[in-house]
Length: 167
Image (tube, rainbow, N blue to C red):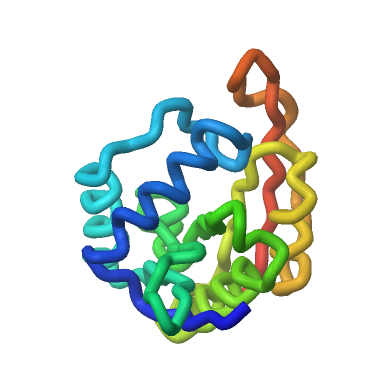
């Protein structure tokens, strides 16, 4: 699958919102239960980029259609956490298992290191989410713990896997 990884732009948010809505409604990778609006997604984008952190898309080079996106957000608001970020990655259903997530996460790690970050934490919804855990492992993250039954979504208790990578 041909892919260009680049900084996200406002024009990408129809595609980003569509991808995220799918994961909100059909998966356990996020614990949101109602998809945010296009405007809310743009506000979130603004908070990430205003913090000087990367927000990336993986797009088809010919059509510019968004196949996935990834970003790093502050891990926690207290100042002692200022060198630690939390990553998020979402891939369109038709583009899964074609290297999109790996390409996005690889570039995200590079950009976070260049920004002076020292740790990246992945908080993965559903400890059975093998594709997400595998792509993080492939990018050098290690499993540091599982929070058991901390979320309740679609009538099911869901774990959170915590992974971490030093930069």
